[in-house]
Every structure is written in structure tokens, then in C-alpha cells.
Image (cartoon, rainbow, N blue to C red; front, side, top):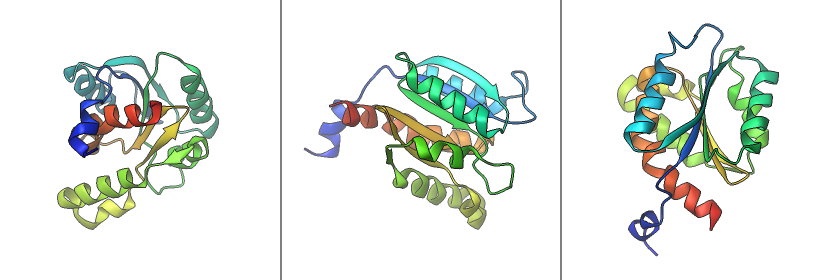
Length: 167
């Protein structure tokens, strides 16, 4: 079965949870979270949950556990905390939950980012994987990174990913 045949089976109505990880943003200033929600809805998917949490290991862990337990969430996007600073702990906290990693997501994101920002793209630890038949994405918090990840990768492949893990 070729790629096109696989994509025909892609899940069409995806319910996303969007989690912004930030110590400084709130609902009024979370432009990246707003952009994710807008892009999801534009593709006729839905938002089951949106929240902003601190860059805190326990908050990230608790949020992940709660969202994995929910039946109304198909995919989870963690936005922010994917860099290399000592405060960035999203990736390190989420990785142990992943039953299968999708290394191609991070590789592709960095390759596409390099075209926009040059070699600084290597500082991103964007990652993705599968946990309990849900697609999990950790992406940087900048609007440009969100637009790139959502437009070029997540919204293109999430339905296909979900079909694959559920069949």
C-alpha cells in the first residue's frame, strides 16, 4: 500500500489538546497557542483542551497524565520548553511517556527550520511520539516555529499517524 492509499484512511476529525508551557504567557499573550487553535479549527479539527502551564516538571507530568486518560483527546501538542536552556524541560518530561518515538518529526522540523533560521535550528529539541494511541508533539513556542510545525508536518500527518496506531 502506497503513501496515498494510506492517507486515504487518515482520521479526519482530530480532537487536539493544546498545552502552552511558559512562565510568562497568559491567555491574552499566548500568540502561539492562539495560532495553533486557529490552524486546527481551520482544518476542521477540534480543540478538546487548551491550557497554559508553568515550565515545571510536575505540572507537565500531571498534565500529560490527565490528557492521556481522556477519551476525547486524540493528539496532544506541547508548545514551548523544547530548547536547551536549564528551564526547558518539556521534552525531558514527556519522553518517558512515549511508547514509540517518531524521530523523523524532529529531524524534519529541524531541516525545515534550517531553511528559515539557519544552523540555530539545531538548538531545537522538537520531538514527537505515540502514547496510548495518541499522537504527542513537543514543539518550540515561537509563532514561526508553530506555523512551520503545524502547517508542514502536524496537520499534514496527524490523521495518518492516528490511523496507523489504531488499526
